[in-house]
Amino acid sequence: MKIVTLMTCGDSAEANIIKGHLQNEEIPCFLTNQNYTDLYGGMSFKLGTGIQIQIREEDLEKAAKIIRETYPEQYGQVEVKTVCPKCGSGNVKLKFTKPRLKMFLLVILSVLAMVPATKVRTEYFCKDCKAVF
Image (tube, rainbow, N blue to C red):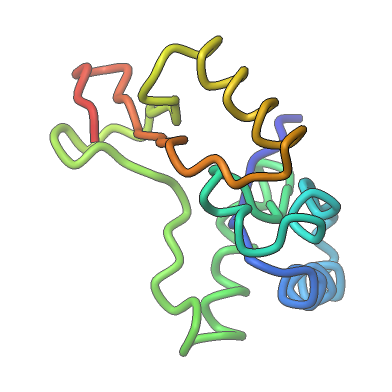
C-alpha cells in the first residue's frame, strides 16, 4: 500500500472539511504539515509546503472525483498527478533549484531567525525526458 498526496490546502479549515468529506465516503486519509502551516500561515506556500491531504494510491481516482463533484467551483480542475509538459510522463519529482544542503541551511536559519525564506524556489524534474519545469 502506497500513500500519495491528493492535494495541498492553504489552511486547516479547508483541509479538515475536505478530510471529513473523504472520510464520509469511506476513504481513509490524514493530514500532514498542519502544525507547520498553522504556525507560519502565509509563508507556508513560499517554503513549498501547505497542508497535504494523504490517501492510499488505490483511492486516488475516487477521491479526486469526489473533490471535483463536491466543490466544482474551487476544485473542478483538480489535477490528480503532475505530468511533464514535454513528454506527458507522470514520473516527475519536486526539487529545490539550489543545492539541497544550501537550501536546508537557509530554511533552518530562517526558522531560527523567524524571518521568511524568500529565496527558496522549487521546480519539477521529469525523470524520463530530463526536462525541468
